[in-house]
Length: 455
Image 1 (tube, helix red, strand yellow):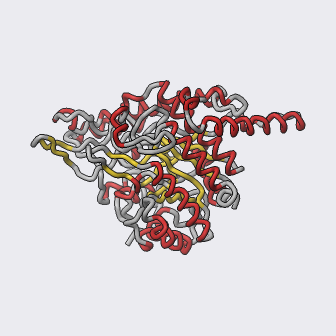
Image 2: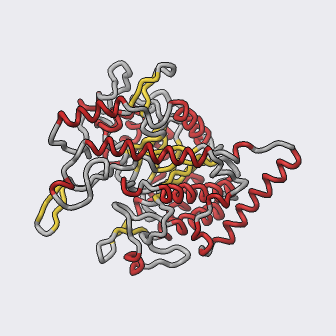
Image 3: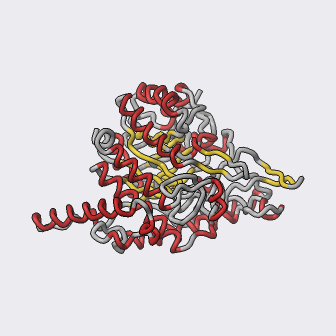
């Protein structure tokens, strides 16, 4: 059974008394303590009023008054903390959001899976190549990808480097946003160069022009500028997997009388670490951030209700998001019982569809990939199931990149298995490239605008 929340007994390190899965084994505890002390003294990456504003927006999405777009890399790497890559990722998220805005006719909450997605869960603690067994690569926050003893040794100093890369990423994103990069009056600022070669270019241009014409019309007759179209709110998210790193950036904010994880706005718990009695749930229950839990085919109604009771005991609006990931084949059978179980708790829930993880497969050559048609099918089925259940799908969670990669099969260009080798760059899971991501948004928005989004 889960333990009832008790803020008196909770503190940022209380998770140490629970079983913690997916954590690195460091050889030098004293070095770890020094790193945690250093991280704890550094400025936070985000601030509490940003976190609280996101929670308000998620509360609106729970009521069907907004829609959440969450997207980014499966795992960020330190080496890819480059201005061009960051800008391209922001551009494709902006493009998808404007497509959804046009189809939904409601605000889009933009959340980047970035500036902290440096740790990844693994199915095994070790991997063996040519008879040599070493610790698994757990992301740049923990160890290095090269297959040597030195590379795979967990290094606590990487937590400091992860903090620095996250800070650099956030600083650049904020500078772009504050400088008018996301101004809907000037979407040419955030055009991805290769969108001009996309089969969906014409539809995208028409959507952008329609929005721009509407803005010009409103401002001309009202004599006022629509200020929210000139500067957007942009939030960050990552899986709160590495608990020492998360603990170090957890601060008590006196004016709120609450603890906040200030390494990100919107942390989530993965399926592998969602044990109601485990260390991750213990840590998450005490922070005031809006938070998410990944749910899939292995989750029972009782398990889900236990999690909801522990993580949102007061039924706080905006607090809890459930990101479901079943796969196109299983969603229609598996999702309804969980919707019913969550509804029975009385907790406000933001339901988000992750159509990526349940549709992963491995090619004959050993590459992990995902089929575009299965990804689209799961999103469409999610809207249908929620509508039939009297529920509301309030968001989508995509693994994507602004780069011209070939990691997922299908889409308008008809990428095939043989095409994957051309530009397969993912460290862990396959991502939609810029063109597939934009096509997915256009097809989802076009197919759901009347029957789904306009509910």
